[in-house]
Length: 621
Image 1 (cartoon, helix red, strand yellow):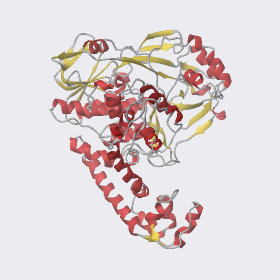
Image 2 (cartoon, rainbow, N blue to C red; image 1 turned 90 degrees about the horizontal axis):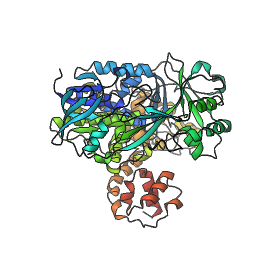
Image 3 (cartoon, one colour; image 1 turned 135 degrees about the vertical axis):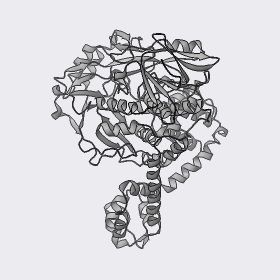
Image 4 (cartoon, rainbow, N blue to C red; image 1 turned 30 degrees about the vertical axis):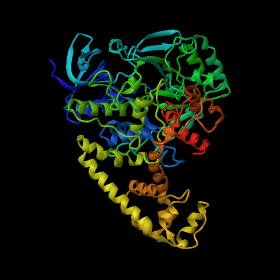
């Protein structure tokens, strides 16, 4: 009935879809197994892609040949570049997506790949012989042979949904949990744990008073995620912002005695940076309000996602509290929020390739590794799919360094530090974030994808080579061309920057705070004429390269310095709480773990590279 596959991917969420693409586009014959063909690439929580650090990951996935960026560009309803007021290392693209179009486009692209087959059924176990995975076993007793297997089970492994005092099995609302895999992995010697995540209520947008909320429009000139020629967004749907209140919090507190989070029924650890609304008002009792993002689910639906109101409280409490929110007085609820507990396997049990240490040719990716977020799952899936292909072809694993990609940072963190709470990527986790910007992901990674043999890289590489050439030409012009004070002093005064007294190179002016190349070309006629032959992408990249040249050189030097951290000793009685420049999480973890060296401290989950820099400064290093 079935051929023998090179790679079987279990689960068709964001991780599973990218795993299938990664292996198939390298030439492997892939079987994608899912419990429901109608929920492929389902956006289980927020219908949005990207965000702080997540946007960088998504552009890296695209640069490596993944599909998430392309799908997002085809289905987004709003685009925003976050953190534009900060430096370019912090700029992070984010798109609100049409939930149904997103899943439909993903399925269409997967079905267009002749190397990918599909099977709809629950996988209940693995076929393992002599420590090597040989295939999967399904709920109706089928054994499907393969040379490797990638598990991307998301929240489905023994998933348990909580709404107030009610609890029932499920991988997400309306779908059953997956049974059997956890139990077999434990028998094979793996360690497992429980984690928790949640989702907010969905409401009827027709019942909301939009006039009293703050509108949050998209960018005037929206960009894209993919480095390919995807369609440009011509119209956008706005999001809105409103706030909870003391009255809302008081209503929510009346349900705390029935909350599974407070009465001990939920034992899994929830995401630190995306807490439920009841967790927020409990932990931050001094705050009278919390911000809520009111986000549409698509172009042609009235369904609304209430971002920031995740809850597992009883549905009557959720509804009563919601109607106290400004603009929600007459709200109609489509379904309540809920929490879900699920099994995960601490990722310290993996090799850096995401292959398990205990079973050869078995790979884990996504939430099974303790991460949270579509983007974190997608990049793991892509890397696992690539390495599954390479493993069955007896090729060396493809590994990205921390200095090469956010993806490298994420996987290195998981495998070497582990995590006991849902792991989310932040820019602060990357010590080389000036090098790892969203705008240069193609220059960093597309040549690596071509070297791997990834399908359809020829056109991408032509674009990369053209981009490199154009950026170099612009940089050369900026370094050698001088500007007269009369041309630019008016602009400099508008930026509260000191006027020139003599001619200087344009590069020197560009290095000043607040000076941007796109603005500078308006004042300097020769620059404007020269740049008229180049697109804004190349112009901005060249400007950033020169403006932050000194910082990028320092980041390169950091690599060597990090190797010497093991020599810096820490005392057991060191009081980390006294260093207020450390993040709250770092103070908590360092006091708990009491590391012996800075090197050991740097590998503790939750202690970011910026926290290590603070420690070094504090110690006079």
